Amino acid sequence: MTDPALDRTHDPATHSWVASAQAPGTDFPLQNLPYGVFCRDDDALGRIGVAIGDQVLDLVACHEAGLLEGVEGAEAVTDSRLNLLMGLPKEERVALRQRLFDLLSDPAREAAVRPALVAQSAVTLLLPARVGDYTDFYASIDHATNVGSMFRPDNPLLPNYKHIPIGYHGRASSLVVSGTPVRRPAGQTKANDAETPTFGPCRLLDYEMEVGFFVGPGNTLGQPIPIHEAEEHLFGLCLVNDWSARDVQAWEYVPLGPFLAKSFATTVSPWIVTAEALAPFRVPARERPASDPQPLPYLTSDPNSAAGGIDLQVEVWLQTAAMRQAGHDPVRLSRGRFRDMYWTPAQMLTHHASNGCNLGAGDLLASGTVSGPEKENRGCLLEMTWRGAEPIQLPGGEERKFLADGDEVLFRGFCESPGRARIGFGECRGRIEAAL
Image 1 (cartoon, one colour):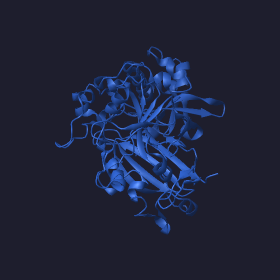
Image 2 (cartoon, rainbow, N blue to C red; image 1 turned 90 degrees about the vertical axis):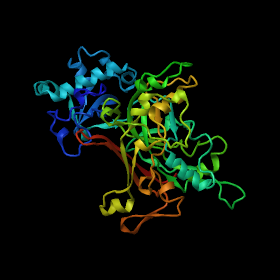
Image 3 (cartoon, rainbow, N blue to C red; image 1 turned 45 degrees about the vertical axis):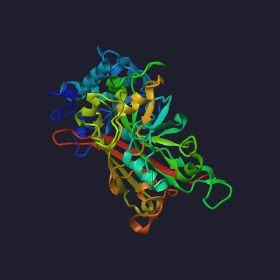
Image 4 (cartoon, helix red, strand yellow; image 1 turned 180 degrees about the vertical axis):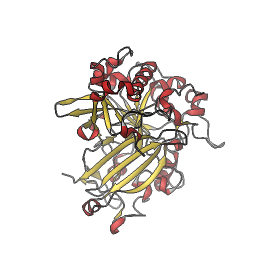
């Protein structure tokens, strides 16, 4: 392999002795090995594991059995969350990945490793990290243009958009793991023809299909992260649903941006696909038209231009209460590509730290809604229904402008290309419960 980022762990010809890791369409082949945190009835605190096929490899059990001996920093897997592991230097994370790959591919090690396997169906998956801070960006120019066109048709993009990765600080305390019910929020809204606002349940509840990335070692306060070092601080990616109360947002966002319209819940998928697993799917950053300004020097590097993007496909699926009662499967609403983002993960992270803001291991950054140039690429209902003017027609005669109580939204993501093992992200799902 000529790419120095690729090693034996990316070889699609190597298989695991875990039979389900070879199943067609599996999200978790040997070449993936995403990290997560799980618990069983006898261990509510959480244990670190990696997904392999339909199993979880218990890394605490591996450590206790001496299977990780000689791997620098391996004791980090004994924590109840992934923060210590995220904070390891990249070379130590790579060495641990290689050991896990060997344990799960070498038939001679099966007898020693198999006792550390547990079925995914037998565990509860938890938030993978203690998230100290959460920041949400606005990195899709297609999304920003669509939303801007609804409110400012003559000037969809604000003057700063093509110069700076736009973001806001979210609420880490309301991050929830996939599968957690989401309560319809209440908030203050104001109708266009009303003199005063009212308070009550959100009427325009929406999802936002986003990609999240967890920070690795991070930086100290006052010390920026140069663009050429940013990749060292990107531990891995997950799927994020930045639930949004659009009517609340419309009333409150001026002048300081999102607040209660976003802070009631943000759903995170439980498995973190590492940057190392994604190495075969790195692509050039989105090419900008000649008429667009080029990023300022602190956001520019040859490696980022050549391979700052990630060829990740994301999908949104919906199952209504009526569909569930009738036994109908979820229906796919859209499919987008993360490679279409205007700003890369490295640029977002570098900009975030450019003023000396300290990022810590386990901090979560999200991309903002992943949307593309076509209607089927739009990653939220606000765009898909154009503020409700073009309702989505669903099986059974239902239609949706925004989410109804009982709706379950399901995100999926995967990377695939000829000659490579398919790398999946699992699911990010949440069901809407009625307001209190």
